[in-house]
Length: 259
Ligand code: SF4
Ligand code: SF4
Image (cartoon, rainbow, N blue to C red):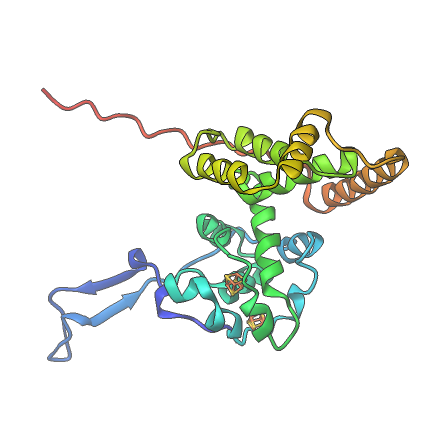
């Protein structure tokens, strides 16, 4: 039996009457609160399987809705609308449109894993949150999060060369997320590095930026990793359909003030 938190009742579904007398009793205001029935007609019967196909979503079927994840959640303590138990319920029921309503909250999971420690069924809710966030990106409901872009930049470099060069990872990440490299905290960090790190280390870092470190004989490993990624992508395409690019919503038309 699912748990229904009061904050999940949407304000637009609550109605009261200012003046209502029933059988001679005044039930105006809060006493006449009605909650309109919510009808969900657009089930996605494959939703649980789609989330389970993504890394981290494998154990979602084990959830028995105890709520320990939400109860222990760091973000829920700040914002009660952040509710892993509820989202797992929506996924298991196939309520896609309801899940999508919270698309701008789900990615806010900070991966503290308190929910994972509290879960009595080894669902690994933290990983389910990550899988759900990736599902939203893949279906084009949200743009790629900074965390996804960072993973891509980092993985691309490792796969290509078998090693990473920190400066290049940071630069590519900033480029792809449209951030300037001249941010005060970054400038301060570089200044401190120049001031405090040994010259030999700074020289090695500078050379790595120019010559891009590579693991010797990396080619076969790179090919094997790329083959594996291709296989996994094909499996995901089969289960979820091809990725849908995110389209930013059209800006609302500007109201021209009446003369
Ligand atoms: S990992 Fe995410 S969902 Fe789990 S407790 Fe931390 S913030 Fe909440
Ligand atoms: S703690 Fe585990 S079993 Fe309980 S609601 Fe959360 S995911 Fe489900």
